[in-house]
Length: 454
Image (cartoon, rainbow, N blue to C red):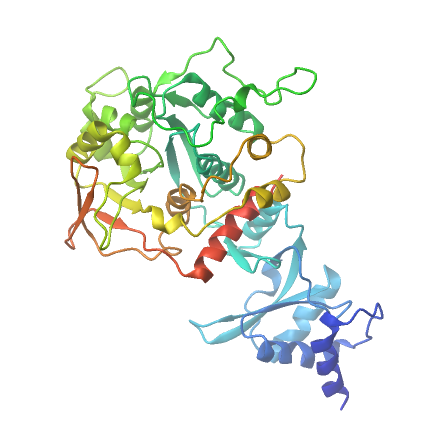
């Protein structure tokens, strides 16, 4: 009867406002926690002090209680939890058909880097966000992910979020951002990246700027003056390392320099804008950085290109990014080595990911001085802006597990900017399928989790 009462108490406590704390012995806790595993097949985290399930924070398991999956192991788990954080977690592994129990620790939700460092120290594959219900990979096995971001900064704000995601991934030790290519002409657009680099603590990331690209492309959200924003005292809000008189390396030249310095087949390129700089790279010849032609340099050094663009399925219509720079785009498709994989992220994948301006500002409420927050406070960002560009970045870092991809094939580009996909198991191209509402909710929560870190 006592155990039945405790089980009932455990079920109702999360919704009861009473501050009274139940007194439960460790022996009774064994039965309670074991029952929790039966009632919560998707997992749980339990405070041994209050017998409540915490609803906020980042939960990580201790290595010391790993592989505790039966009732006999629970006393040791409880003992460890009592000596540390008084938290026990449980989760079901469908591959092994076992329910695991662990002594756990909870970090604040805005301390993701610290939680992941603890996870790697304890050889845990994931950190669990209690509030958002999502798992974040720890990369404790230290996979070497090297990325170059190629963006059209200065128009749509999803470029800002894609770059922000890469900074946070570096905080998490999930990747190395080798450099940023700005394929939208104009020094102000590169200055935005410079300001972002310093704001997020990575001032040494090199920046390349396109100088012979698309003339006067459309601008949807004019945040090109972000780098020059000033306080009411006329002081620059965001520091820059290049300065007003500084110069950026030509974009295709920076590509050549960065690629020449990397191991063979090790670089991923997240292309989330025009492909002007990539086309010029492929057309380039030997120089002071490499004796290889651009085509050979890409063939040797690049593993995969993740491109935001393409229209697939039943629709046959132009793609925005490719059409805006159609001559460069045709050259890119013509010269791209067939040995280099390319994964497309069509617009419909990001269409449902509506990160509303009011939510962006609320998520960045932890500071009054933030480049993305400034953009959303002082410009009209309610323009149909969706989180298209981050999908190429997330896929590049997280791998294919999070995305449902098409079978392999080849993609050709028409002079009208249409992307035509032909199935072929030997092809180098795949494309992301749109996700269902559950998937969209998960990915948007993931982007928001990155935004609140500081």
